[in-house]
Image 1 (cartoon, rainbow, N blue to C red):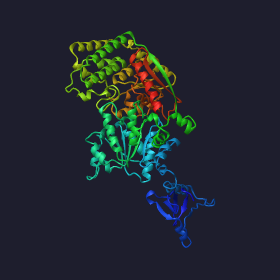
Image 2 (cartoon, one colour):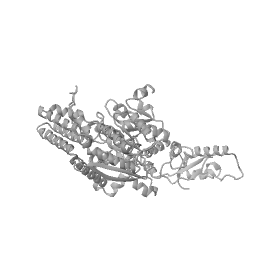
Image 3 (tube, rainbow, N blue to C red):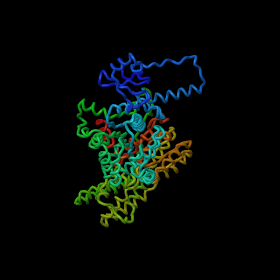
Length: 619
């Protein structure tokens, strides 16, 4: 009899497990857990079996039912339910499959098989956007839960994903999790015993990482953190630009210091092009990984890393696992526009002004010089986004009561990625205010001149908008429902407003919805879900507040980047909202839209291509 066989011993059915000693067998009750495993001496059992047959270890017998024993359908259903309940904790390799309400795809079982070979589980799941990382992580949690190896777990995720995680855990894995954030902590505190913390009392937790990372909340969590931690969007918890990312990294790093804690990292974009950040991410799994030269790993190191790191593209899954297409084909096209004469004059004037800002600050302290760089880049980005964003960035503003601190002003998140202080889709007026306050009177007069130039640009002179409307009409005619991604709220509202007017001329049945970060998370979700259910053609204009969290594949089949992101990860996240599993359209079209005579867009395109190439080589 080999491990995995079902045997009979002491009037009970058992699963024979692999053991280290030839004369000792390990037995787990067919309906028991790992806590019920017993050891039996093989020779002693055989000896006693001559007198007491129940002491002998023998092959279990399951005779087929007699065809003469015919019963009614209700009895058959009762038998089926009894067998299901009996066997779901039995000899099957995964005990969790009887407790979930989904049917996992074959490839989604790979991470759980890897996890069961690790103690503790330290795993980075970096499958493509839309492949199902939430399901893969949920399977691991449910399996460890059923085996009795964990009794508490927590999901650390961005605040906008908390409700989605809670819903997924409840509906698909029957794990009733509580959401812990600034809005719920008071109620949760009132519902727990006085001698326990929230993190001790609730076994299943979904926690906003931006709530628990701060010094006022972090100590209690670290002291009573569960034995299993899942970090979603783990790429945002690596050291990077801005203090907020460092706070997230410090939190996860301290959790990882407990070498007995299970840690699962989820991200579709593990590598942003910054090698050091990727190494820090791997170092959370094993500190030694952080010291490796990833470009020169030998086979032993690669094999060791492969035990903790799984990454599959959709092409890998279709070719190696499914054998048939199960994802849409992504059709990437480039579309360009030419700046009008008026817009070109505005850009040249703003560019010259930005160069003067930077050059005039060479004698300043280092952090002040960086601040001028950030403000110059932010101003250029606003001007090239839309006339309305340019006007908001350039217009005269009342001096705020409290100016930014040096640390706040020296934060590239105003240009590159969002932080908690500033929504990612707002024009960075605090930073521009700070720079304007430092300008002499001639510089302030230049700003007023640039503001008037931006106000004077008419809709007819905005070739970017005009060409976008033509592309959108073509997408609608080809049967696509597009999502138009903008960087700033002002641009999104401007594009949506003008598209409603321009599309009404030839495409009256197409409806346009605008979603920005000025709406609450729940309002955004409800509006998008209702919009996707409406019949007919639709166009969604959105900022990056929707690029993570809300899946759009059931209502949209094309993407147009009105403002190119400056990070290759953001490009993939935008397109991944539409290009994902269960997309009904066989083709998803992604339009990279940029100015062919715009030097800023040209530089962004080169950086995106170079970074993407570097990431592919590293991974």
